[in-house]
Image (cartoon, rainbow, N blue to C red; front, side, top):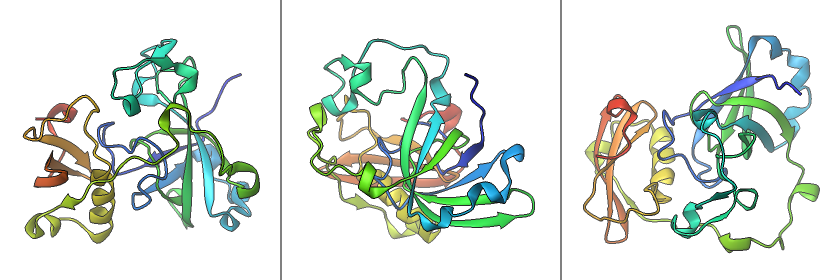
Length: 234
């Protein structure tokens, strides 16, 4: 079977560092889904406005060529314990496919890009290829008493975020809201807990530097442009 890329995502995330570890964890993050030229037929979206959420099937394009392993180290377990790849959502899979549930914020038509979907809560790097879109149907897709395995079934802890006023003023309201939600999830690698270390994250065309200390995320700098060579820590 040959898969076709039907669309790509425009998101605030220029690189993998900082991307929420699951879709829906940061609903404040807004993205766009732009269809490839051969799939810009508005008839293909007829009725989609009636759904509040969508499933996206996409490619782990950032590491599609890196192969896979039968066991991986889930960040939820601190990167110290191995689990079977099919018991995790690791990107290093035999077929590098991802599945995300996103909120549909709206649909608009543009002369140059055709139909564009506004999305909330996507966990996707900018430019991610999309293979398919399916509506989320609550009566079939929601299972409130489902077992959570080694994850415990609970959302990760969220941290308070401190952004000085003069730095927050550099961002639009929507970017600031999304950034705050992303930082609250503590984007640091699970094996790094040094409270003095400063990290650099690309978000919405800015480099954001922060550290996590005394149980809070503290932003130390926001500047235009991306971190050198895509570096995520300094």
